[in-house]
Amino acid sequence: MRGKIIRAVGGFYFVWSYEDSHTYQCRARGIFRKDSFKPLPGDDCTFRLTQAQDVEGYVETIDRRRNQLIRPPVANVDQALVVFALTSPEPNLSLLDRFLIEMRRQGIPAVICFNKKDLAGEERIRELTQVYSQCGCRVLPVSVLKQEGLETILELMKGKTTVLAGPSGVGKSSLTNYLCPEAQMEVGSLSVRTERGKQTTRHAELFAIGDDTFFLDTPGFSSLELRGMKRDEVKEFFPEFTEYEPYCRFQGCMHIHEPECGIKSAVEEGQISRARYDSYLQLVQELSDVKR
Image (tube, rainbow, N blue to C red; front, side, top):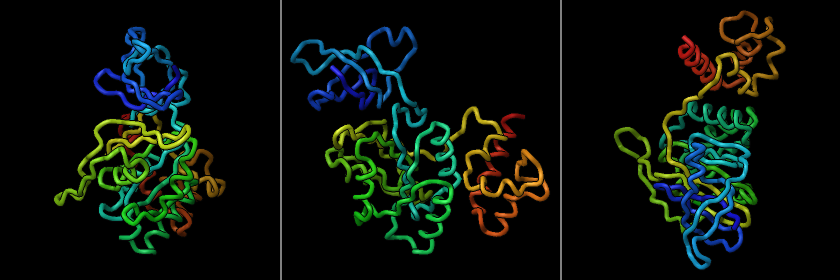
């Protein structure tokens, strides 16, 4: 039978069947362990039932992956819906920038969903929408609580596998419950002391919500390390720099200490977001420290 792995827990792989839309509990064949290959949620596979009428079986083969994420551990993603709150908690834009870079490195389009628009001022919404539209992302201000803007999200997800990602406490689990009520995700509250979300999602799981339409809610994260990246590669992942780089005096300008830099001038003139530029500087410094 043909299927898609939707969850992996304790050595078991739960496979959603393309033939009958049922989910079967499977183990992986020993050949995967021998080859040190670990099946992931999102993998398309063939599986065989132990007996014809059984609900258990074995994963036989895994199709070649189009892509693979380390965090969250998932394969064959068509797009990422990156969920951050506009307020309560205040968005960690540096963390958002890192996630956008990681998605771009993987060749996965990212849509930014800014939740809790009902609690934020119009000026703040316009500011963040403008900044992140400028870097090539579609931006959707929504209110999961008020169910505003959620139909647009559903339309964007049709026929795709979408990963929901973002910090804890921003409304991902509430959005999951809207998209797939039978998921019954536990909704967490904010920690009063840290104003961070209490993590409610403990494993990666795909949910089927239509014809060839899946989404994955993931455990919230508070940090993201960009592995294997060089300091002089960072600027390539800030698309809003491209327009102003021809005005840099030096070829290969890093946009930090060089004189007559088109990027620094654009920041001073308000054409490039200072927060995005500061995020760029922070990443370059971190990668410089790693190299040393």
